[in-house]
Length: 251
Length: 260
Ligand code: SF4
Ligand code: SF4
Ligand code: FES
Ligand code: FES
Image (cartoon, rainbow over all chains, first blue to last red; front, top):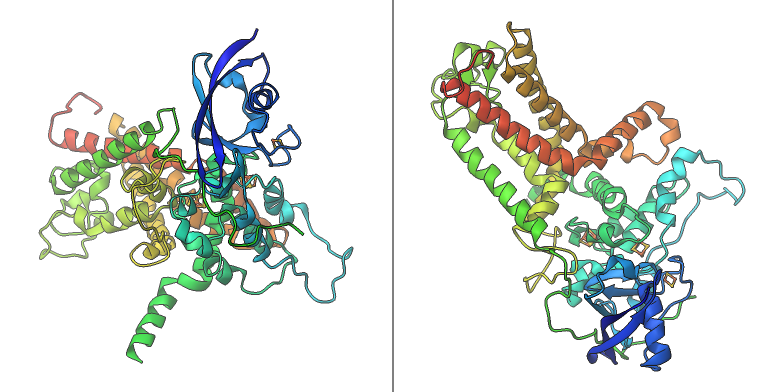
């Protein structure tokens, strides 16, 4: 059961480019990445696409399909009707290298700004004793495959390039939450830096990161909002905050 | 270590000159939210100014607790009128700010009105119309952080509505209005205890669940409600409107069948 599908694929380098039209064969059981590969093999040998596992586990094939961030290898062609034109573009928040391949350096730079796990002094690896209930919240966040679609869809940087220096994005809010909730992490100031350096306050909890996460991590409910509440504990308890304001002003 | 591209190499995003390439009906959800929240606001203004809020044993939720001397005897909360007789405005105005502030600063309602009223963003991967964005980093939106204080007051309001429902329950014979008030109280409590601040306070702020088994159990329960917070927000909003309207219609004599 194969048919000819209409595709529009964004092609170009370094930002300049346009949507190109293709008509291409689709067979039963295929995913969008298969069709991109068929385009490469038959009509556009220089079409660039990043992929690796074809199993939704490496996070390489992030792209935007009909305007929505998706993994190319996990988006079944059967979810589209046969007469639909399918538009494929690279992720829109990161600079383009070529065609569907973007430069995701932003995410690696932000990753480095999160101090790594810091155990208490004198406790050596192998000596940690933790109950399952104490680590299970963090385990949800370990499912992340670093596809960066959450950072890509987040309007804070997607629509406002100028916010990039001040904002690390949902991918790193789950990382910070994981560490801050860890029973053996003693790094100081994770809450302060979450709000300061990493820009937690920019997030207006509109949940697009949660909507696109292919691992179904409840990014907003289980990481961002709990971190906002923890920041309130240390920073915005309104009574303390008001006191500080009045105190500063009267000085 | 991961490789990153040194500046200044390619810094340009893919240029596509449309607001979104989405082909589904992404505008439907914000539109329905806009209509739902607007109708609640319009109804609320009318209800607060409306004076037929009491018909023994029912009191309309928008006007409860009734704390002024102008409230009819039976409507006064615990027979109490701390506001005395100088207060002649509608009694609903006295307490409006508490449930109002609770919902206004609720994490779910924030999402819903940021999306549907402020279009920031209207839907995912749809470009927002604003040139500048600072989110909740500065005044006025930074004030959203007071949410947990409204939560404490919301427990009181939830308690009052439960008390109203129980008062109606012990009144014989039990009418339809009683069950409406009971259902409303249950939904309001479900919404209130599913609050993210409540989840944080029970045990979310701890890193060692195993050392606090009771708080952990509470957190587990709150987390279950919390996962349904959006649904409970809508359900309790419509139930409070419905219950309020029902009581007022009975009070006005518009609904007048036996066991009303
Ligand atoms: S919930 Fe916050 S972090 Fe997630 S996409 Fe929305 S604004 Fe960005
Ligand atoms: S949190 Fe989800 S969407 Fe974000 S990078 Fe990880 S897997 Fe991708
Ligand atoms: S190719 Fe690995 S996630 Fe798609
Ligand atoms: S009531 Fe919705 S988060 Fe608190």
